[in-house]
Image (cartoon, rainbow, N blue to C red):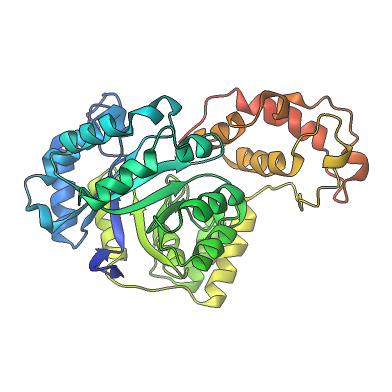
Length: 379
């Protein structure tokens, strides 16, 4: 197992995310298969994985309970446990103390090695920072008391949101968890977020390294391109090798749901094999072939001509995301906008199209986006 230095700790470069644990056959998301989870955790620890990540809402609230029970069979100092305050739900903002105490109890522990503000994004950043809720003040006190060893945050928000949170709380936070993979390097401009975090000297935790499994298998054509570079490297491993090539990446979390995935990923992290410049070039070519992006350059000529004052570049970026895969995160990002600034507010006047250097059919894109948003989304 590869290990990364963080403060006084040596963390396994691969962490086990407890968001997609095995569930009972025919069961609901909250019915975790504890027997299989025990086997997976045992295997993980036996093969050097020492970081386990859970959260209040995972598996309908059962993830913390099961992980606490399974990990509780081992000495507390033999693993690192991460949990998060569920501020993605605004109704939780005035409950930080009661939820934190509940989480400790559910996990059967006296402290969390790592604790995060969960999913800082456009809709909750103001409540997260509102002094009347006192979330940072409370978590800071828990850290001083030793009940939180390291405090960080996860972020699905846009670049400006990430920067604002760093500017406000950067001195209190020790790490940041972002969605990072070779697809989102371009699709969500994760490259810019990485550069920002490196500028702040903020260690990077990675979530969705394989895009919820979508990068675990590719088309035959793209698979052949990668195999021509590394004949013995499996396709999922390319996602991890890419991340091993990114400066600042300390922890890579994978939500593994069965033993086969765990064994394969653990084998990948037995050795660090970052990609060469030429291999990254080939991987970016593969990425481009997977994307059907409308080439909005965010020049913002359109915004001054929109009678509804829509933030068209941001909406186009989110639309491109939805065209690849509509997710709950995309829906949340749009939901954070005022109702009169969402895609369905477009009146189809085409004033924006008259000045668009790329000659994009923005009005059609907004109509299609509005229709996509009412469809069920994936994770």
